[in-house]
Picture (cartoon, rainbow, N blue to C red):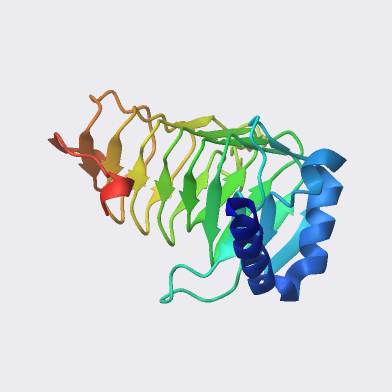
Length: 231
């Protein structure tokens, strides 16, 4: 009976994504081996495909239907614009993930984004080389993570273009609040919380359970963390 109930709920869920079923089928069978693709592990709502190159990998032994949802209507105060996907590099999922409405992922040719299990993203991620999130991370709405300057500057002496890139590594159970900017070279410990409108721009040598915020970001307090199971 439980299998019948599970199949029924799965069908109900799929029907909610029926307007985008062709894009869902294309995405899954384009990126995953057949045995994974038939389970439809990725569901898409209002997807906007800019490029679908590179690779998408689910690095988890338990592949199941709808374990990754992209474009889900979560934030009703944000535009109901689904998700933008501009993929040239590699996107690795370690487990379940939810990308909310008005989110985006952009990866250049040599870029690799690794997302830990239970990723919850309502922002934008732009990767030139390397961006990594640990498990149980939250990137709130209107926040952006990027590992590059993107626009090069010209050195007035040499005439050379200067553009810097440095890896970004976010620890486990980090909560990055809304309107935050995470730039190249950011490294955070586990169990950190960042207040809204913060600019993360370096390696933060703080203890776990730290509360940080500001522009530039600095330690505000200790002894706190975001418990997603108690919110």
